[in-house]
Length: 138
Image 1 (cartoon, rainbow, N blue to C red):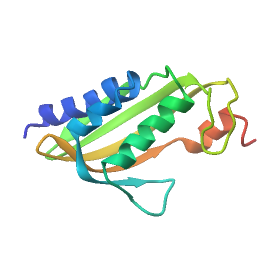
Image 2 (image 1 turned 180 degrees about the vertical axis):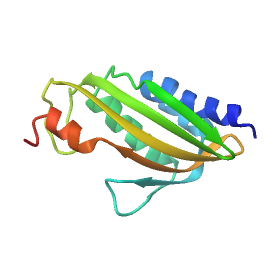
Image 3 (image 1 turned 120 degrees about the horizontal axis):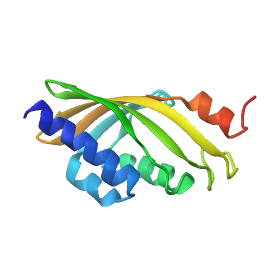
């Protein structure tokens, strides 16, 4: 699979799932047995349903938010995406009640793909900055 095809899969994840809220696209671009490594959790997330849960969590807490891609870099079976989140906190997120505050954070995810599907990822975003913007931390 070409790196351009892999990059297109990741762009689709951000454009259709995160920006538009079409979580059903996850069924087309994420492997059922996907493994997710997240800096906020000691245990990996497993399965396509876990990806849907994350997408729904973010779309619920920050409805209408935009997730711009700053960089999409690919080599072999991996794609690195540097992304942002810009939105209004309108529902509970990580035990923080809705604040109606505007937030802007960034993150980086490395995706591994096989047969045009995401099979594994390693993600990190500015959780500390987000919690500060929400007023949950000084």
